[in-house]
Each structure stands twice: as structure tokens, then as C-alpha cells.
Image (cartoon, rainbow, N blue to C red):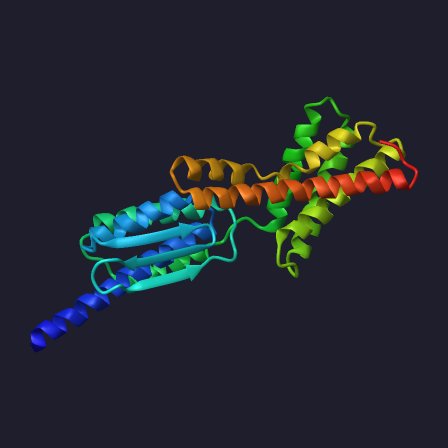
Length: 266
């Protein structure tokens, strides 16, 4: 009786450790922008590889729930509030998870430490990201045969708008406010330069300036999730993309409206 009891406690403890590990991996995947179907597949395969067949997962961009629907009903849940896009971390997590799946026995503590290192891994600084985004946007406007001066103005406006966005989201609960104000700045700045005669192709500056804020990845992931059958996640990402596009429209439209009211012309 004692042997069975000890075995039961040991088995339950091992199951809890594996489930918590899978939950942590899924959390890091979602925080760094992985598709929900990929998170669900890898977490399920990890648990099954360790002998836990009756696993149930519920994954959306904002929450992950993992539990057992047959035996003792162990369930863990984690909400995801901060999300970004970091494909390098997703690649590291994918490689580590596949390695764990192939191993018969794993050291939980060692694996947790590896995951923490991945979570804290240094990424590109804001300066590098903003300069890269500025150069990309300015190069895009240059394709429309804009002047070198407009190229420089686009670069400066994009870097400035990204700085504004970063400062706003520090105290804002949603990124929508940051996008609205940042794109408003892009619209007003481009029209002001046009009025001074420095940027006759101000419309192209606006088009290039909003590129870093476009929800291209959200739309792509939405379609990917919908095709994979994750209707809830797909619709959530589609809604996110719609609200982002709406925010850009409000910011640029508000800037144009204000400019006209101030006596300017488009």
C-alpha cells in the first residue's frame, strides 16, 4: 500500500513538472509571437513523449491552458499580457523543445534554467531597431523617385514616431493610443514639410512612414491560424490587425483633417 502510494505521488509530481515545463515553453512561444497551432502541437508532443497521453490544451494569443482530461484532472493556466515578435527566440525555443521531445529523461531544473536564459537573451536595442525601420521606410519612399532630402526627412520622421510610440506605451494599457499619436505625428510632419516646400511628395513620406506600424504579421498569423482550424485565435489576431489598421487611419485622417482646418491643403 505504501509502495503504491509512493508511486502515485511520484507519478503525480512528475506529471506536474512536465505540465509546468510545457506551460512555460508555451508561454515563451506566445510572448515571442509564435503561431498558436505550433505552440499546441509542440506542447502536446512534449507531454506525450513523456508518457502522458490524455493531455488537453487550449491556446490563444492571450492565454494557454494545459491539463489532463482522463486521470486526475491536473490543470495549469497562464495568461499572456506582453507580446512581441522575436523569431530568433522562437527558433531557439523550437530547437530546445524538439530536443526535449527526443530525450527519454530530462532534467527539469536544468531545462528551466535554459528557458530563463532564452527569455532574458539580449535582443537588438531600440536604437538599432529604429534606425533599421527608418532606413527601410525611407528606402521604400525612394522607390517612388522622391528626392534625397525627402529620403532624409522620412528617416527622421520614422525614427521620431517610433520614439513617440515607445514612450506612450510605457503608460498606456493599449498600443492603439501610441499608434494613433505616432501616425498623427507622421501626417502633420509631412504636411508641414510640404508647406515649407521641402517635401513636395509628402504623400509618399506618409506611406513610407506608416510601414513600421502596419499589421502585416498579425494578418499573416491570423490566416495561418484560421487555415489550421484555430478559429478563436485566428479571429483574435484578425481583430488585432483591424484595430491596428483603424488606429493608423484615425491618426493619419486626424492629421489631415486638422491640417485642412488650419488652412493648409493636401
